[in-house]
Each structure stands twice: as C-alpha cells, then as structure tokens.
Amino acid sequence: MSELAPATEPLFPPLVLAIYIACVAGAGALANCAVLAALLKRSRNGLFSIIIQLAVTDFMLLGFSIGPELWSYNIRTWVFGRSSCIAYRGLSIFATTASLYLTVTMALHTLSTANIEKNAMILKNKRSGGDEDEEIRSSRHSLVACSDTSTPPRTMNLDYRLTDARVPVAPPSIFVWILAASLSIPEFALATTVRHDNDVIACTLIDNSHRINMHSLVALFTLFLPSLILTSAGILIICQLKSNKLSKIEGTDIIPALKLSICLIFLYIIFCAPRSVFYIYRLYTISEENKINVGYENDTTLLINLILSAMYLAATLLRPLLCITLLPRLRIFLSFGFRNIDDV
Image (tube, rainbow, N blue to C red; front, side, top):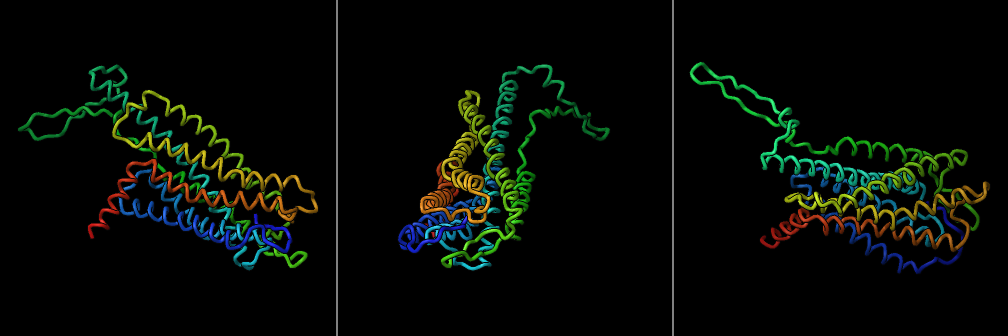
C-alpha cells in the first residue's frame, strides 16, 4: 500500500508527521504494555486471551507497518531499502488480518458466552424456585457410590445441564493466525522495490500478472467476508444488550464484554475499513497499464492515503484504551499493579 507519487516537496512537514507518529505510536505501545502486564501474570479467560493477542498484533503494526507507510506516503518514495520493503508488505498483511479476525473472534465469543449465561440463569431460576420440569429431571442420573458391607449405598443426583460450559478460544485463534500467515506469504515472496522516474522508489509486488488476482483474494478475506460477519455480529450484540434477561445477570463480565465488542466493531468500521476500501477502489478503477503504479496518480490520492493510514495508526491506541475503560476486571488488575508499585 505504499506505492507513492513523484514530487519534490512532502505533503506535510516531516517534523509534524514525526511528532504525530511518535506520540500516537508511543502512547499505543504504553497502553498495550499496560494491558499485557495486567493480564500475562494472572489467570485469563477466553476474552482476556483474545485481548492479549490483539495487543501483540498492535505491536506488529506499530513496529513494522503503519509508521513506514505514513512516512513513505508523505515524502512520496520508499527510502527504507528492499529488505524493509519485504518485511513491511508481509507483516502489514499478517498483522492487519490477524487484528481484524481477532475482533471477529471476540464478537462471536462474547455472543456465545452471553447465550450460555442466559441459559444458565434460566435454569438456576427454575431450580431455586423448585420448578423442575420433565426435561431437567430426565437429564439427571442417579449414581450409586460403591461402599463396603458395613455402610449402606449412597445415591448422588448429578444435573448435567448445570455443568460449566465455557466457549473455547484456542481453535478460532489458531485459525486466525494460520489465515493471516497464508495471506501474507505471497507478499513476503513477491515484494520488492522498483525505481521509477525522478528517482522515485516504490515498494510493490514484482509479479504484475498475478498481482490483481492475489489482491482480490486478500480483499475477499480482509474486507468483504469480515465486514459481513461483523455487521451481523454487531446487530446481534445490540439485540443482546437490549435484552432484559441479560441485564439480570450478576457477577459476570458479559455485559462489559459485549460493550467492548460493539465498540471494537465500530472502531474497525470508522478507523480501519476506509483504508482497505480506498485501496481496493483504486486497484479496480485505474487503467490496466497503470496497475503496478497504484498510488502514483496525484497529490489528492496521496493525501487521502496519508489520512487513512493515520486513522489506522490511531486505532492501535484506541483499542487498548477501550479494553481498559470498558472491562472492570482489567481496571482492577491495573489498579492493583500500580498499588503494588507504590507500596514498594
């Protein structure tokens, strides 16, 4: 995404852009470090495991992707060398895909957990009120414990419907990282630097014949499919938050988790999706002979790219801040950590 237009002057003063990158990236790194420090040394449920993985992807974006992309768009050429170009192209696809699908995983995980919590609450209310229907009684089995001849046999009633059923996050997490690695392999293999007129260097793909087909596949898995899933999940989450049954659940993090999921969905739609949409739009609207020069059109295109990438960088700061703000247990972990530091 860093193919840039030839010109003599940068779009913004380099010092201004450097201050923005340093402030946002530095604050994002500190916020993600706080999240990792709060969660790594404590027991983690499925939601916290996803948050840890999101923090890892944010570090990848901060260190290898968005910063060089912003700088190259501003000065209209790639100045970091061929090896850095390969790392940038591959890690950019890898980290953005992982971050996106981890957001999808969190949304689906919180929805599944909310359904389990509601069903458990309904069963608990029936059990406490003594209203045991035929379905609950049929799910109970009487077990006779073995004993010696001196004591009578003991009978235990086990209600298998009330067992703890947590939603596993390992299978979807493994799928997310495998998908991200698969989509990034062509970028690692085909990325290179190309010198154009006026000594402008572009970080692009060398294989132009398969470039559009590969990016069409990337667009399918990183824009169209996740957008459909996130839109559907967002509607279901809003319906869950408006449910009266869910508001009666006490002592769980399900409502804050649902609020965090819907906020992360809106964060992706507002700050992250426009960058991908604009890139795909340019990819399919420019002429065939200029497809290798995507981004070389004019200053307006460069300015839009720069603004959208700056918004994406801001998302890496807002994600951990939303996690800290909306999850009470995470705030407690952080407060205990600061309290321990003060005690020392």
